[in-house]
Length: 128
Image (cartoon, rainbow, N blue to C red; front, side, top):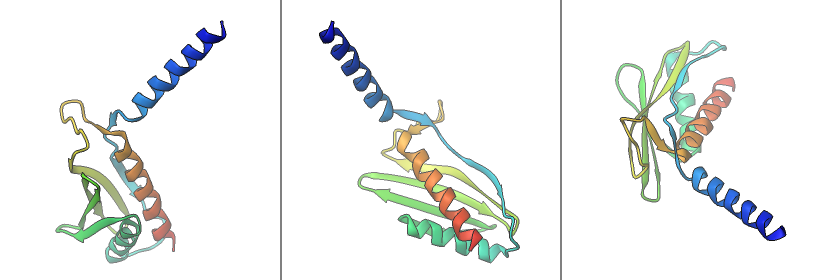
């Protein structure tokens, strides 16, 4: 009986481990309202500080958009962050070695954690 329980637990751990390394739906961050009065330049600077603090390379593009790139080992994620003085949004742009599947809109599950961390860091920077 104990052997069966151990085997069951081992199977569960193995399944959870495989699932944790799997794919997830691509996370985009819809429009996030900026409560405190800021200029569009203030918002870009907050995005840049937040991104750089987490290892992202953030460059200003056209039409109030920042392009941010994260390079980790052989992986690369590129996102577009559109912003105004009132809000910002984060959208997937491209990736390398993250198992992106356009048809299913899935990507390596670590990507979503990186986006959540970046979004939280932007909120912190905007509150300063």
